[in-house]
Every structure is written in C-alpha cells, then in structure tokens.
Image (cartoon, rainbow, N blue to C red; front, top):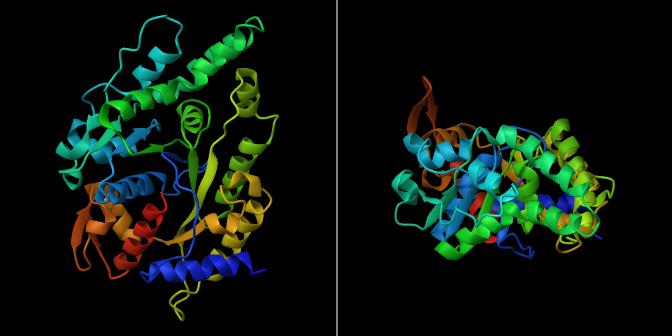
Length: 350
C-alpha cells in the first residue's frame, strides 16, 4: 500500500503544475467550508472556489453564515448594509409563529457589486453581525423543543435543525442554483451548526499548525461521537444524514527552496498529522479512503490579501501587478500561476 503522505505530495505536484491530479471523489450540491480555527482561509477559499464554479457556467449561491461578514463585504462592497440578511430569515424560521416564510428570493445577485461576477449568475445570502446573538436563540429553541412531550419533540427539533436548509432550498428553486457554498464561523453553535445540517459535504481548510490539527480533530469528533449535541439532537429529531467530508485543504503550506515541490519540515509534519488523524475516520469520507480527500495549497501571501481586499479572484491576478492595501504595497509574483492551477483543480472536484 502506498504511503498516504507520498500519495498527497505526488498529487500536489501534478495539479500544481497544471496536470490532472488523478483523484476521483464524489461531488455534491451544497458545501460548508468549515473548521474550528480562525484564520485558515475559509472566506478566501469560499470566494475563489465560487468564482471558479461561475467560470464553469454554474449558478452559485453563497451563504455567509459567519457574523464577521467578511464574505458579504467582499461580494457586496459598499452595499453590504443594504437588504435582508440571514439572521432575520433564521429567526423567522425557528420561532414558532405559525406564519408562512416571508423571506423568499432574498438572495442578492452580486454581479452589480463585485465586478468579477458581472455576467455570471452568483447570489449571496448576506450575513449579519447579529449572528453572534443567534447561537443563544437557537440553543433556547432546541432546549425548549427537547422538553416537549415525546410525540411532539422530534418534529419540532427537526423543523429547527433544517431551518437554514429550507431557506437555501427556496433560493435554489428561485434561481435554479447548481452549487451552494456556506462560509462558516469558527464557533459551532448557531448558524454554523445549521450550515452543517443544510450541507451535503464539508470542505475543511487547515493551516500547518497545531491549532488546526486540534480543530480538525474536533470536526471528526462532532461527526462521530454520539455524546456531542449535534448527534444527540439529530437522533431526537429522527434525522440520520450527516454531511460527508469532501476535502481537507491544507492552506499556508511552505516549501523547500531547494526543490520546487518539496514541503518544508513543518508542513510535512502537520500534513502527516492530519493524514494520520483522518485515517482513523474512513467512514466520514465519500470514498472510505481519506488520503484521496487531502489537498495541499501554497501560502497565497500577498495574492490572497489582494484578492480579499479588492474583491478580485486569484485567477484574475497577473504576475507583476502591484496594489496598495491599507498603506502597504503588495506585488503579485510568479507563484500566482501555481495558485491558479490549485484552485482550478479543487473547483473541478466540486
């Protein structure tokens, strides 16, 4: 049997140099980009993968489930304060008012605010800073539902857990959406929890550091440990479907200066740690072979900062361009061509 670490590294060399990475994993309709560690590149990955999907003529729905609203700011720019937001829609869904949903077709088409998406059908369910408060409301509603009579509790809990899924489904129908990408918070309770319930699969970005490995371990535990609230509430509601892990994406990787595709010692160490951890949970992956779901990305450095600050997808950046970001001059260097190949490869798997 091939060494999983060497399998991942050989595949990295292939797709980074523009060749086929030789992997066949299931694709899904809805993806939550998620991890319980901030600063791993969730928003940047969501934005750039969404653009790659749009280039493939797919209709994309972004869902900003993070109260920091970084994705909403990238896509809406100066119009970020305009229009309905996800918090209001979720509150309407989980509260027992008995009224029909009023938030139908609330997603904003982003081509008018983010020029990169002009001419493409891409939509956004806008985030809100009030999502910081939503975790408490959700916990309260679930606790109240769990205390109901045994005959009533399952349907009420199920209604709450699938609230975001219903909101997304209405947008899918209204706009004939092909793919949905949820940008989530590092904190699970709240909109992130409902994003997991709405998603078919998870994309888990990790950095090459210990905190990311801890976060990855918690993702596996949340999906596997019956003592976790996620699984307990699911079992109470009769929901059986948990999202699969589509991919673990190692961001901010660093490389030896002597060999073009040779990771440095720290990258190799943390990549191996992630693989060894994943190998303990083969049933959580669509193929049963975790090594087929682990992918390396370079550290996007200045290109990543430019992409987020200027709402420019990485694939539209060109070597030699210079930008002033918050008083700092940043250059797009030749390595952006590697990033482009990596993002195109990942998007082709979705």
